[in-house]
Image 1 (cartoon, rainbow, N blue to C red):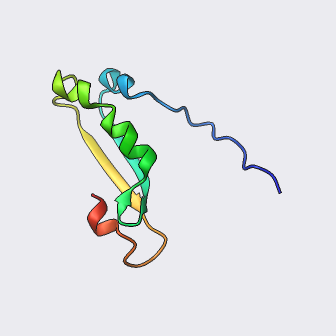
Image 2: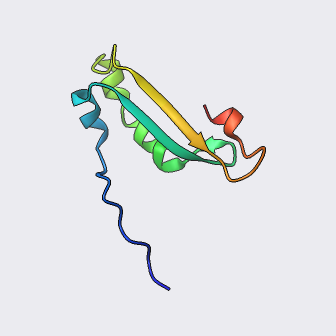
Image 3: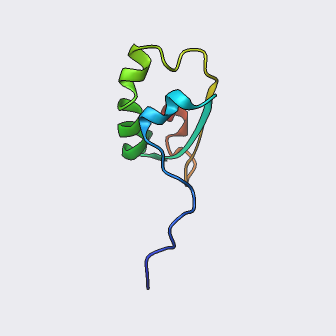
Length: 76
């Protein structure tokens, strides 16, 4: 056994969202809630929202669950 290979996807910091034209986030559900890592990321964007640096930018989300009734209806 070994660790899975590291992804080539770049990990962004919340402050980098101000430079984006728009954004789409995808994440798994965890017991009817978004993943803790994404919640922490989203919470860290509070300053950007307060100063309206994200105003007018298109945004979207998608999420998945491993089972029927896995919480997707309460995640978004």
